[in-house]
Length: 273
Image (cartoon, rainbow, N blue to C red; front, side, top):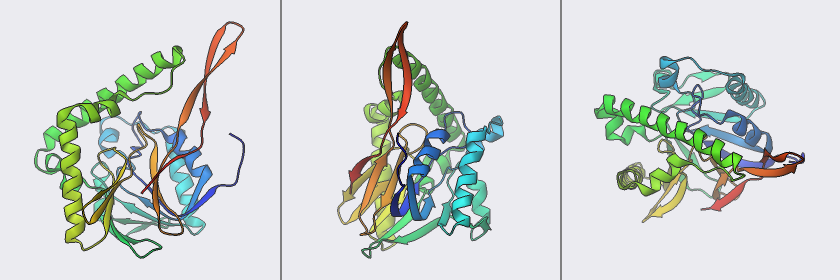
């Protein structure tokens, strides 16, 4: 990609980076942050994956680079709010604390440029499995690890065949009935929480399923993740909200001995609210 000036936004919302896990797309996120800047950034939970780090330490340089980039932005005057999730729930004991200019909280209220108010929350607080059946939540986390491992195998095969990236785990979410039902229930309960909070909508993460959708009088927004979909939500200076997908398109280039796959960094694809 040719060097261009970063796109400027009023606010950027990102979640579910899962730094500390092998599945985290840290390099893609660094590239995204290089091309997109905002006055305010919300880190909407599961930024650091404490569950996986407790099982086995994995912290490559790219994960450290993400943290350093965010800290540099905070030093430059960007307002950064870290809304803790279930994988980084250890931070909830530090609500109101500033770490290098980054403010930690359990939830926040964000007001857009056009006066709408949104509850910003990770969303795990309304996942009954996470809170009531912890062993099942950990088992589900292991199952998700397996699905992401399948992703890596499928990607290697598809890359060899000259095909673009395809996510098995994302496909399963929209095809497996129980997963679809869970997503629908999650969206409903978060929308109800927005109504109880007397706001216009909710911005959350947790289920790794990026979406902007209207549920009666409430706007439900999910930021997606940086494990599979590489998505973020941005607020423009007029208050409008969009999902950005940061595609890394596989291009197959012919060589003298066959085909040589290479990854080209693409521009963001937008989905308007």
